[in-house]
Image 1 (cartoon, one colour):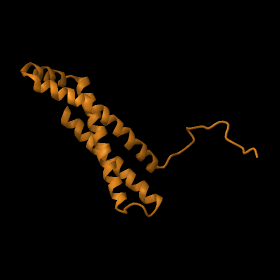
Image 2 (cartoon, helix red, strand yellow):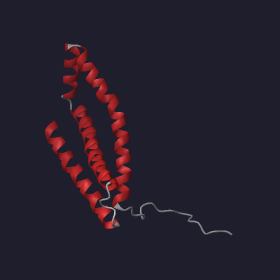
Image 3 (cartoon, one colour):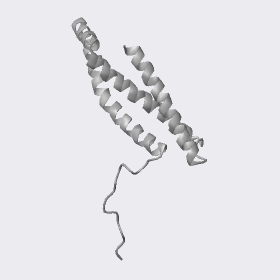
Image 4 (cartoon, one colour):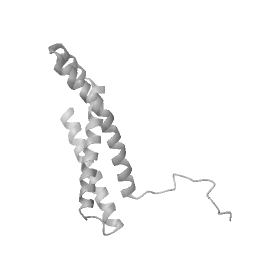
Length: 125
């Protein structure tokens, strides 16, 4: 009854398909966006408090770190959007014929998110 079980699992040798990576990153980007809501709401509320609050947020957003955080939020949003559209298309029956079509659609989502991320970086800086 003793089944041989792996004693040592080398995670660097396991190769996930693009669909698995896309699914994991979609969940991670959702968690990042959920946390980003707090930051964005705080910035929005502070900017609407008064003229001093608006000036404070405006000065904060001119800093490198704030732009980097905002770029990370926009990148997470871009990936979540592209992957979400991919999931909606899969719900309608597309990209389900084979593993290759699923991998191809995941790569398209990666490429779309990369393009949107670069455009967000250009827009911010």
